[in-house]
Image (cartoon, rainbow, N blue to C red; front, top):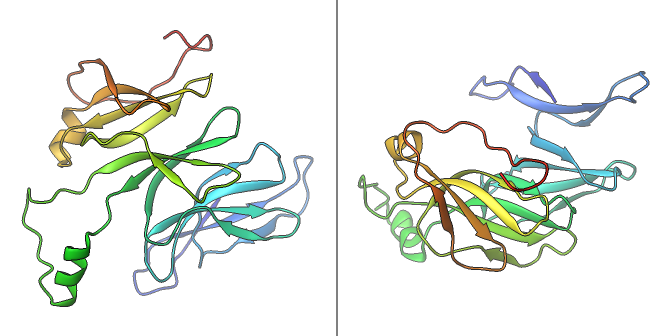
Length: 212
C-alpha cells in the first residue's frame, strides 16, 4: 500500500495498492488512489485478497475482494453497511466484521425534512460484531444483541470464539478508558466478560495453544 498526495478538494493523502514478485521486479498498480483501498489482506488461496474501500454513492466503507489474475472485484457487503474492521477466521471460512449501526427509517425521513440535528447522548450508534460466510456472504449474522461498542477483536485458533474489546457506551471517554475484554462463541448469543480492566487497553493476542 503506497500513500500518495490527494487530488480532490480535501488534499488528504490517499492509498493505492501495488504488487511486486517476491524475487523482485517491476511493481504493478492494482488499485489506484481513486479507490483508496485499506486493510488489505491475502485470502488463503493466494490468488485474491480482501480490502476495504468507500462506496462512491453511499459513502459507507465496504469489504471487497479482488482476483489477482482476472482483476475481477466483488463486494462482500452491501452499500448500506459501514464496515469498520474485519478479520478472517484461521480456517478462512468465516469473516468477522465490526459494522456501525445504520440510520433508522425515521432518521432517514427526518434527514429529508432537514431535521437531522444530533443531540449528544440520544440514540447512540454502536459498532457491532457480525459474521459472514467467506464464500457465500449474502447473509450476515449479528453475534449478540447486547449494546456493546466494539473497537477491536481477534479470532481463537480453533475458529469458534471471538475475543473483543468493547465499552458499554460510544463516547470517546468510554472507549478510551473504560473498555473491557469479552469473548463470544460464534454459536452463542451471549458475550462473556473475561476480566475487568482499568485504563487504556492496547493490543490483544492469544497464545499458540489457545489457553491464554
